[in-house]
Amino acid sequence: MISNSVFLLAFLVISLFTSCDKTPTPPYPIPEPEGFVKMQIPEDNPLTYEGVALGRALFFDPVLSLDSTISCSSCHQPALAFTDGGAVSRGIAGRMGQRSAPSLLNIGFHYKGVFWDGRSPSLEEQALHPLGDSLEMGNHWDLIQARLRQHPEYPRLFHEAFPGLSIDQESTAKALAQFQRTLVSANSKFDQVQRGEAQFTPQEKRGWTIFFDAGYPATPMAECSHCHTDPLFTNLDFSNNGLDEISSLDEFPDQGLGQISGNKYDNGKFRVPTLRNILLTAPYMHDGRFKTIEEVVQHYNSGGHYAENVDPNVRPLHLSEKDQQDLIAFLQTLTDSAALSNQSYYPIKN
Image 1: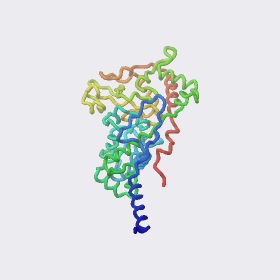
Image 2: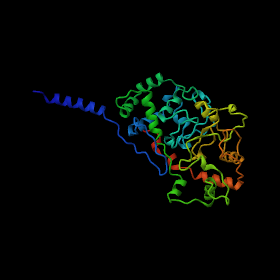
Image 3: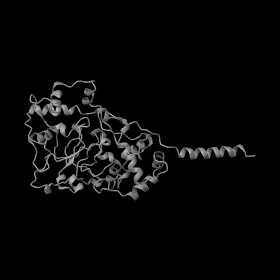
Image 4: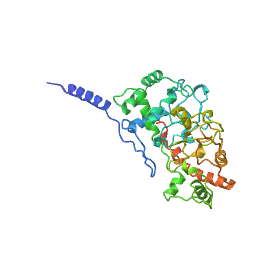
């Protein structure tokens, strides 16, 4: 006869293996704001509560950098709309990067490539670049993997998020991508006006009219919405916006998309950034050359610099000082304070 203690032991063993093999809890509820393009989520990386929690922990943890001094959040701070306030980002040992850290808000909707030059087709692929870049986190995977496997918490978090997978580049990238897809901003004053929950001031309304070329000839056209299309306030494309004075397409100091595509007509083109929370992301452009939003508006008002591939909407605008201030007043309505303070962005507190 089998004793009760044997039955109890068998039950405990079965329970242990059952709990270890528990599948993650899908789906993590991603907002689908009205008018936004559908977020493209890979079939092999659906968002789960466990995957997002792991990604959030990794995003804020300096353990991923070579000297354990910086994390993803060092260059992408929630309070600054996931930028860092610098002209170019700084990596380990204070090393200066080559470009500005772009905002990650609504990055999950960017399906035409991420980074300023579009080098990565997906967030999973993108997540690994900063880890090994000598100007950013400067690490190598063998060390990252060893640290994560020896960590008191990460083996459990990885198992809960990806049962059956190892702690490796693939699972790390998947977790970071899951978290980044939760960084959704869609509750600015502009959105509230669109939903009938608020009203523009007269100045904001006039700025809206200038931005969308909606009042010509009574109000001037600023040509903004051709590239900064609502509701994402980007067309997700790449453009030369007339920043550099060059005599040939081979002279751009930073070739941008052209360096990736190999097409010289893509030289000097960079991803059109979102204007959501734009007043929080100074300095501006891929190299942070403009310190204020006023400088940005003045650049476009001047018509920029000509090149064979300059965007045709970059032209002298002849905006008055009032026109420019009204336009900036409208841009202020794209600030989403609720997104910036969303506690689900921050690491879990024990």
